[in-house]
Amino acid sequence: MSKRVGVEVSIACADAVGLCDVDVVAAYPITPQTHIVEHLSELVAEGHLDAEFVPVESEHSAMSACIGSAAAGARTFTSTSSQGYALMSEICYIASSLRLPMVMAVANRAISAPISIWNDHADLMFARDVGWIQLIGEYGQEVVDLIPIAFRIGEDKRVLLPVQVNLDGFTLSHVIEPIIMPEKAEIQKFLPPYKPQLRLDPENPVTMGPVGMPEVYTEARKAQDEALNNSKAVIQEVFDEFGKQFGRQYKLVETYKTEDAETIIFSMGSISQTAMSAVDHMRSQGKKVGVVRLRVFRPFPAKELFDAIKGAKNLVILDRVTAFNGGEISAPVALEIKSVLFDRKHHPKVGNFLVGLGGRDVTVQNFEEMVEKVAAAKDGELGPYQFINVRE
Image (cartoon, rainbow, N blue to C red; front, side, top):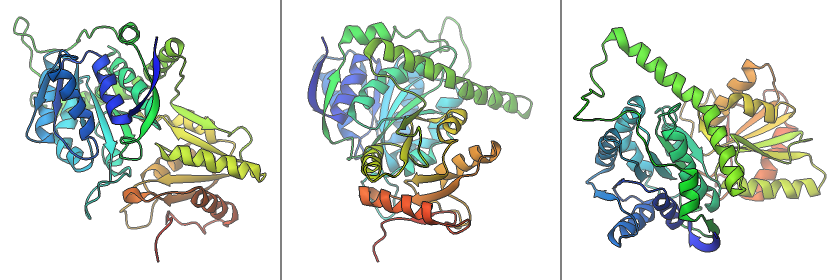
């Protein structure tokens, strides 16, 4: 029988990886993800997890080792953050292009400079076009659940793609929360033994990642694009199967008090908890406000997102990353949502706010301020984006 226990989310994430019977963990430490791979090394050293733990010399090497193990048919895991992800990113493109299922936890952290070990979504955003499926956890239970879900999705023969599970650094990774840890038998029922579809085999030699001449490169990229696009249906199918077995249901796009909402706040990650508290407070004052959160950022669930926000008059879109585009267009998340709205000819008033950069707190009062700004603004007054909670 599963029990609810108080545990640091990073440790619980590592325990969830252990329950998935991984074969190889390639790891390099970087704050704030270090506790994840550190605990996995303990599980291996103490005999609780029968796996190869490969301590490498850099994140670049970690992903290289992961590609080798996944190509050989091993269930593979790693974890990283921020600058480590930046160093790793060259090889991450190869993992997705070779269609190698593996799972990586990303403890989201700001990108230097200045050096910051605190949370925002700079690493999540620069990796959005690397070709990986991107799942997002809001609190500890979701991170634990998303680990076996990620393996199940990536290893599905209809998908065969690497999957990352994003969790906010420190504000989530280092917090102790009450978490229901599944039993090993429950996970084994949900996640069958890994049967690789593509692998290096001396008895049946193949070549992976050869030079792609102009005559084949476009077709290879198109096949990869179709695989990511088609994975959306599989992701929801796996969410539904997980919900049926464990009683915790996930969706590509999740909503909170949006049925009659005139203003919708759009958020991702642990900040959504504060957004929902702000909505409760504003609802008590008679304001029709709701929250829409993305569980999946890649593949981008455009239709599901539009269905969730199509009745709103005002949108408050949070970007937890700096735009760096010359100030003429919105930041990444708002840009994607505006594209969805434009294609479907629905044009609510949109306010794009850059918040929580480098770990700065975003309060209930900040959410109220953003909602009021959008509601009171006339057409054209909001501009492409605004920074919120900036010290004078």
